[in-house]
Image (cartoon, rainbow, N blue to C red; front, side):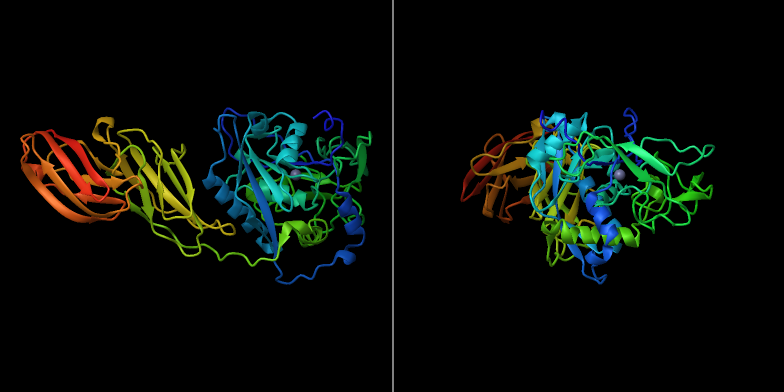
Length: 510
Ligand SMILES: [Zn+2]
């Protein structure tokens, strides 16, 4: 840290508007303060970097880092990450750049990174955790008061609240990571004023905003040329692109029906214009944004093919996951034990993973179950007794996260007194307290391999009232006792298999 603090770091900070927690202040707008020196060289001789525009998709590996507090709470939900990743790839599709999860997601529990007050703390987080040969993206609760930022020699930090499924912050930050400046560069931290003469040049402080960690020039000021409407200085001014028009708006702004700013500006010649809100790299609100320009796309591709070749892989990608999974069991409020509930669903073509999410609220706002598995079943941990749970499944693979979420299924956990624990036989039966006529469930927590079992019920005098032989599937089987006509009282249920006998008390209550 002591080494990092005094350094000047080329840093691209950004922000987008999005739904915020009511109690939290809105993240500050982007704080970009520089132009990547690579981009200056590139725009001066773009032909040297010319990349044929064909259908040659560039495949970029991303390492995901999900931060939580020290106690593991507050992490970005997997569901939201999959939606955000789908949005990122959708936003980049016209550019022929496609992202994939290069490695398993990295989960980090450190409160001071999860909510970091200043950029050097974020840089430290990245230096400790960045992996080589990938773009690294960190999802945190608060990246130093911003919606996000990019450290050019390191990685990107994204605010949880700015990574909703229709937000473009991630696309914007990766645009910075691939050398794109803001179209309004030089105006950051300044408020444009129509009633005063627009200057030809702007000076700005880019302390912390140099391009390498080693750069230690104590010169915090740089100069940007202000772009003219007639395009006469577009190769040298602002973001150095000619197909991004002048834009002097460095606070969040809303667009009109044509995606232009409602705020009128005038260039140094007095020519009036409105800003283009369609650009991901502008500060228009998310609903205005829908594109990178051809010059921006060419620069990003050239940047990947020259500076960031180690982020690329030759593919081929895994096939898209388009199908919908269907919850199979338990569904329709089926009774379950309150721990180690086995959830089963149908497979989906091309899916290598499934995300299972469960909640006590139908909105899934709070997550009680969040499991990723490569199987079509998962076993929960401990749940609250006597509660209704909603659960659903989402199929994906490392390249494809846009498949729809399944319909929502439900189950109800048993009261605490109504569940037996699985014993050495690996079997359990529930409920243990029930009304006459209630079916029982025979289940294993995964320790029982299945096979032939004999189920018997005895009354208090030892008389056998019922028995059934069945081939246990190894998951869940319903036992339909003819108990509707039985007296209230205490019974013994005995299930015998090759693994031993499981005996359990069953109380019938009228
Ligand atoms: Zn930005």
